[in-house]
Length: 286
Image 1: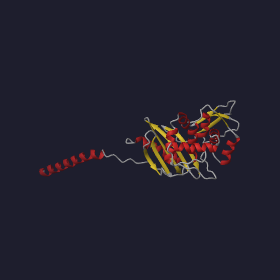
Image 2: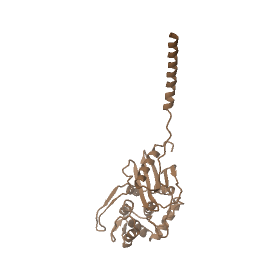
Image 3: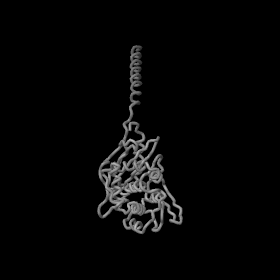
Image 4: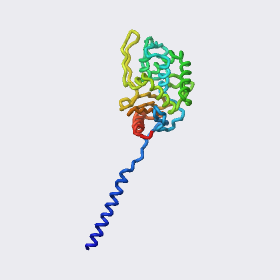
């Protein structure tokens, strides 16, 4: 009996030792990283400084980008205009937005607005009237401005992009197109301008009336704002393009930019962007 008890004790000790050795090894196993699920047709997430691509899905597929077009409009205008320069709103700017069925900043013909204020009307409510007024002024003329947009795209290395207007609305001559990759390159470049970053990060903006213009109040269509570290950048939608979003975020001094194209659910582009930014920020090898 005593020998049996000794044997049982030894067996129990060996089992305990084996379990004790196994437990730490199991505890040190790191679960594999799980990339966020992306439902849209195309997406990309990249480091704005290094250009390193952290995530991509159909990132080089050409497709309509809707109002993401207005990011290039803002970028190009600020290469030749000063924020204090005045732009007079013409009746054709108002008619263009109304006849084309685009979103507007409700601009009033005859108002004279500073470029710096007009950019809020362009980016927050996604005003096609603001885009037309800026393109008409700084082309001069819309066709000349669109040519400049395409030249600027090539200069940035956006070789899979073709703009046909300054706002992204469909035309009877066909839509413009770009890729998630090209739009991420543009986002990184545009956000280096402090004014574009400030405008894109603003949830709402009020313009007081002056002798040059009436009062305006604009709300940003970007529901990602309010998320810690989110910087903007631009929303878009047409039937052909679906819901799109160019976005950026900064955490611990590191800036990430991303683009989602061809999403079928409006709200999901914002939750997906938030998930991508969180996932990208947690990567230590990027």
